[in-house]
Length: 257
Image (cartoon, rainbow, N blue to C red; front, side, top):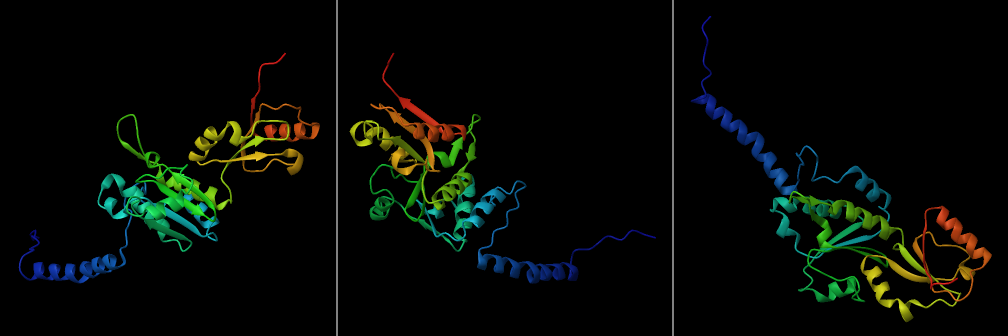
């Protein structure tokens, strides 16, 4: 038998060209119409990871607003920012999440509504997550971090997922200043420090254990700042239980014998 060469000229070439037009052009048109994106990267870097999806599913009954303080279109065609683009667009596909992109210098009223006290700070590229009255800011400098070799490391998805989990819990992690023992108040002595804590997405409140009889579950640190009287045995028991469960206590005390 003699080998035969496959001839791609003439009628066969025309048939293949027609087949390509019939099959692939409609598919391309359909995909383009629905703006469908397929993540073909080995690590699925443009797809929400299972932990994020789990958090979103658990909070699907909450109405969540996500604000990106820039125009998202700016990053659609920038390879180094594509991960952020796909994170935000996939969040926007959720029925309970509303994505709003705007430039703070062009919509000052909306920017001020996210930070009415001016404590958090509002900058281009920041992300704000809001659920009810709870707002958490994600600093734009933390979304993309530079590694030791000078490459970009994307951390935006994890930060947004954590912010959603916190905001939907109903309260920010809180720093409590104990009162009821002659301590100095926050407004009297610690207002600047309190503002710094708030700028880092903590709430700052005073706590009177003689009234609450319990330490709130959102407590991250309890400050005992310059008390003039001893705490009670009941308060001691509450604080010891809190510490045993992994809580943190900071005592600001003057030197004594």
